[in-house]
Image (cartoon, rainbow, N blue to C red):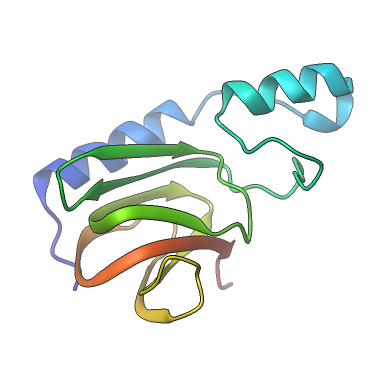
Length: 135
């Protein structure tokens, strides 16, 4: 399951390099700045956002149609829908990415990517979540 294509290796190295900048502490800035930071990083709107429970880094994946998608600092536990399915991914975050066979993160697959891993995915995965990586 973990054949690594050259494109995914490049994506992973890029996402790790991009995320090495000094982190912004969201606990020390005012709410209006938090809202602007959330919108700039393509986070969902609404009161359910917990800005302190996020993965640090960038997760990237390729869809069946060849579209490349990047998610910076994804939210822990949120179900991300991958549309037409994922064929490869690179996990440049500090969390484990868990993949699901359905569109609402209910039917867990037997695959996942630990922090720093990348590879082609052989099963049909349509959604994913981020959880703390095993120690």
